[in-house]
Image (cartoon, rainbow, N blue to C red; front, side, top):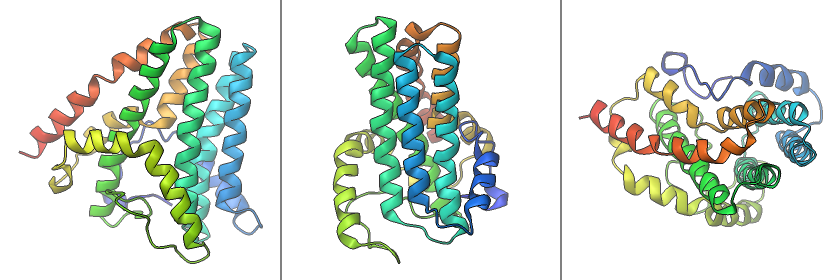
Length: 255
């Protein structure tokens, strides 16, 4: 199941694992496995990828990074198939992503001999990229009757959905806000009028999808396999400059 109606779907370069995720979700549809179980599965894959990076098993690291991306899509697919959306799962997913991103980059720094400053800048860049992509994508989904579990503005904890406890939603929201709030505020201040935009062309969203986490992890895996781990941090630092480019293009499109 797609997050968008068919007429507004675009080629998402960060979502290459979606067909496999759909197979996994359909396989688990009539089992006791929950979307949160799948989320924990991608956390485990992320940890295995980190261990492989530290031990310089780069092909294995790339495999687990890609598998992590597939399972990252499968938890949402399973939630939609079972009709059990939850804010708990959504926040847990996002919190796991940002923590794994940080430790993946730390592992790359450890084996590549780069500087910790560049590693931190690369982490901040990756998060800004992902935040811009999610910002526009969530606006698109809300505008055209797509998946609405994610919200454009995270100003307060949402009301718990069926099957989840409000106190858990509140706690996870606080952690989410602590980890993502700064990035959300930066992107919103750079393009606060995006929500009023009339449309986001498919070609634009496809280009922007290179900011998606799945694409980022694929790049990390490919650079590791190619023996270019030392270029991972500089690549993401440089690529972050496109944040401003995409925002300017979005504004020009919706003049």
